Image (cartoon, rainbow, N blue to C red):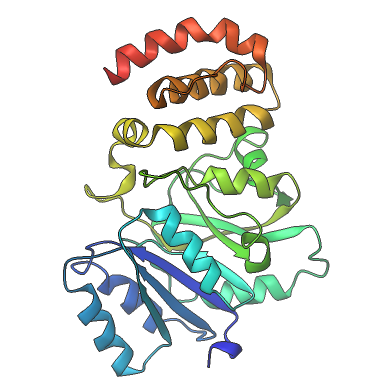
Amino acid sequence: MVENKRITVFTPTYNRAYILNRCYESLKRQTNKLFIWLIIDDGSTDDTEDLVNKWISEGLIEIKYYKQNNGGKQRAHNKGVELCNSELFICMDSDDFLVDNAIERFISTWDSIDDKKIISGIVALKGINKGMPIGTSMPQELKLAPLNDLYEKYGFKGDTALLFRTDILKRFPFFVAEGEKFIGEGYVYLQIDQLYNLFILNEIVYICEYLPDGYSSDVRKLTKDNPKSYMVLKRQATFFSKSFKTRFVNTIKYLIGCILSEEKHPLRNAPYKWIAIIAFPLALFLSWKWYR
C-alpha cells in the first residue's frame, strides 16, 4: 500500500512509450521496494497508457498513473508533488533510470541523518554509467551544502540526482505562465537553497541519457517559446545572486526575457535597477542577435 512507501519516484512523460520500459526495468530491479512509481502522463498520444496499465496489472511494483492535458514538465511536476503521499520524492525522467540499489542507498542515507531540520533532501551523482559521473565527483569532506553553493562556491560540475522532502516541495511549486510549458528547475531549487542544505551522497545512483526529443535539446528555442517563465526565472536568480558578476549576467538574461515577453516595465521590476539600466542596451543587442 502507498502508506508504507518511503519514496515516490516521479516520472513525467510525453510520448515516450518507446523508451519508458528502461525506467520500469530499473525499478523492478531495486533491492529495496519501499517506493511507488508515480507517472504523470502529459497528454501522450502514443500507447503510453496501455503500456502502463499492462505494468500495473503485472503487480511487480506499485504504480500510480495520472493523465492530464499537455502542459509541460512544470505542470506535471506540480501535479506529481500534489499527489505524493510519501516522505521523500525524486524525479526520474522518462529517458533515464536508477541503479539497482538507488532506493536502498537513499533510504539508508536518509535514515542515518540525525538532525533533519535544516536538510531538504539528498544530492547524489548522475552518471552515463555506474562508473562514470556526468561531470566531477562531489567535493571531498563536504557533507552539507545548498545546491547552488555546490556549484558556485565548491566548484562542482555536472548533473545531480535530487531527492527532496515532499513537505518542502509542496511549499515551493513551479511558476506556471499561461500558454507556456517550461521553466528551469532552478526556480524551485534556488528558493529551497535559501532555507535548507542538501546532504551529499558521493555516489552514482541515476543513469542519464539526453535524447534529441528531450527538453534540454534546444535551450534557445525553450527561451523563445517560454519568455515570461524565463523572465521570472532570471529575475529570481538575479535577486538571490551573491556577487556582482552573477547579478549582472542574470540581469541581462532577465531583461532578455522581458524583451521577448514584451514586459511593459522591465527596469521598474528589476531587482537591481541601476544594474538593469547599465545592462539594458546589451540585452537589447543579444535579444536581436540570438532570437530574431
